[in-house]
Length: 222
Image 1 (tube, rainbow, N blue to C red):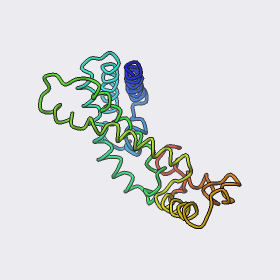
Image 2 (cartoon, helix red, strand yellow):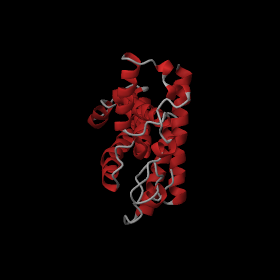
Image 3 (cartoon, one colour):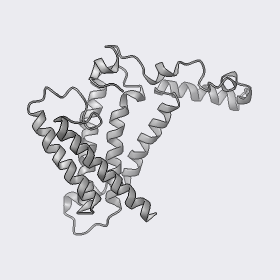
Image 4 (cartoon, one colour):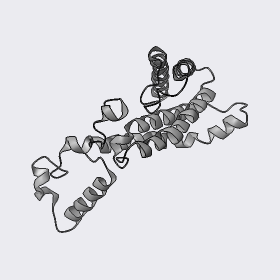
């Protein structure tokens, strides 16, 4: 278990440093780190370069175990703040498809990165921490939870259920069919290889935007 934990920490640190290099190279933030359409923000290129340098330093500290707990706590807190105060307003303001899980894909990646940082912080003991880090340390138990939210969500997406109404509808129909008067072995949708009924998987996974496709709406293809 210790080997897996160490390997995971190293890979995570490399990923964070890699995002830092990309941020510096493109003078812009990766789409899974900050919501798109921020190019009009004054001084965004300078902010991106500074943030890229900090990400590289954070990744290096995580890989080489230099103040790993403190760095991971700060990184997780920043990523969580971006999720709460950037991604959530962005999803509700920019379109009407916020009920579709596919719209939250990049926000959930941010949430997973924050959760990973808290999990790594929890692998290191608390030593002479100040009030700030003791306060941030209270978020450590939630690291695995917020990470699992992304994994569960991606599982739902890949199963073809992209929206909350779709999930509830499927649950109700299958519950009645399985535990009521039906038998799932006799369900023609399952026999025909379509457990979710007569749904076009592509349209479920990539619901059309009112303003056009994803590339024209937010500048990035999915």
